[in-house]
Image 1: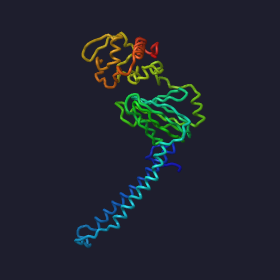
Image 2: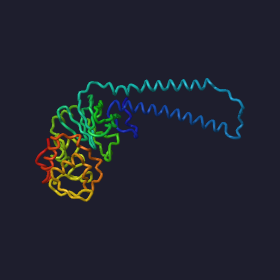
Image 3: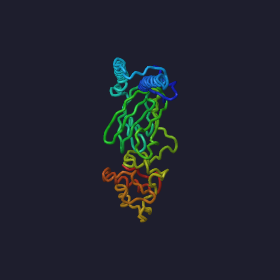
Image 4: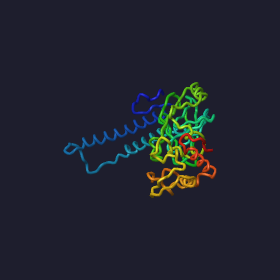
Length: 327
């Protein structure tokens, strides 16, 4: 099958599963639409044939047409089994993929997608894969339930905290396609999107060999780099230096006077910042009375990670980039 790209209401398709899903969808649409039209036509014909004043026989006793009823029932049962036999290979094939030539890890977090390739290369909100080769993504969530959705492949996989799930696929058409979250995961759910980049095998090999390229301003070098607790536990998601809408800015915070929601003023020393990390709802900063976006880290961080975060904040007291990255 050459695909169904000529249909304007279907999204782009980039793999064999997409073509199969589209074909099954249109076949079911035609089948159910045909049945609906047949029923509608019969209702219309009977309404016209037996309208008030028409010259038709209306006997007091009607004969029950069992043959017609049983025939329609048998036809519907056979159609249901035929539909199941035709479409089930598409579904079961998702759980019996070929051995992957590329196996990587994916992490969903509020509100971004992070991927790590076998060679250690990392991507944020982008996933580069080779065209025509089986790919498996082992998925996990750092916080809430997410759902990795690739519309061009017609594939979706829930991503659960505390559990690893898998999504296997083959993308055959090079190009750039949407990569979305299909499970409401918080206030910025709609912004949790990226791109699936399908490259020819030769181009993918060149991409792997090349140094990571990022447009100017795409990331803040020391704020988002590394695998320290500031990045690993999602602090960088809200505490960005270019936005103070979600959470207070952290650059220059160490040693500064902070006004709390209850009117008190405290100095942001080590003790206060430690309490703010472990129990964020205990002393809310004025203007940020809703502490629900920030998890309670008392049960998540060990003493070493807390100390590393405090070193990071101390290093950032003169602004970004800080002189030390937490480890």
